[in-house]
Length: 278
Ligand code: HPA
Image 1 (cartoon, rainbow, N blue to C red):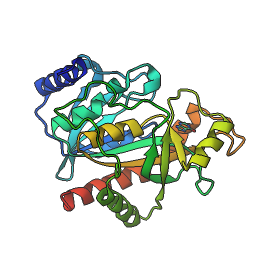
Image 2 (cartoon, protein in one colour):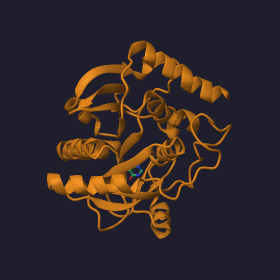
Image 3 (cartoon, helix red, strand yellow):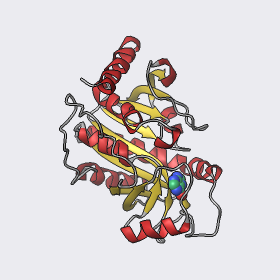
Image 4 (cartoon, rainbow, N blue to C red):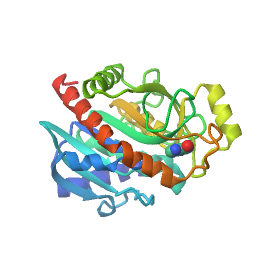
């Protein structure tokens, strides 16, 4: 077992000293979207900084904790805040929390993020169901010795975002009376936003939205055999699509504005997933 895999299991042992909770569904909350943790019946919370070796987020609005609890009867773990490649962590560290949720028992994961809209049919505040991604501009999180205990060396990526979960997301959106756009997400390293020329390039490549996370997490989740779904909140139009200069403040502000609907959507999705016991 390589050092990174040992570190993962050490983090697991650390958490197991605090709680024996076994989640079925993991949820990662992106920028400005952390409030969903208030909607669950909390059993316990574990701060990332209390897990030895765990990568701790430096993004101001990211709380940095696992929250364990129930949505109705569904046991869930929420990651309130994630770490990003641009914070200086290795890709293996960036996806460690995802793998940890799998070890803890989650077989399904819902990833959420804030992104810049490239598709001009999108508007600020829209939700985009990720149908696929482009991760070619960041290193694969699977580089290095393979974590044999989790998955194969050369995992297939033909359907990273589960069709069943996408259907559930669409059905859930209808049930709560909101619209869900669909599209392809491209991950960049960040932390700088893109230049207009880069956004034109990404558009030509087929991307509908751009962000600094998620695709790498989805790859790691897929590698570990987790059913994966991802929803992006278009918090701003990407650079050059409009003349408005980009700021993290705008990203957070939009996230806050759409939170009530977003929280409803997540809850409905979890109810439907547990009802269909996927
Ligand atoms: N670009 C990259 N990441 C982002 C953006 C963006 O425009 N908005 C929110 N996260």
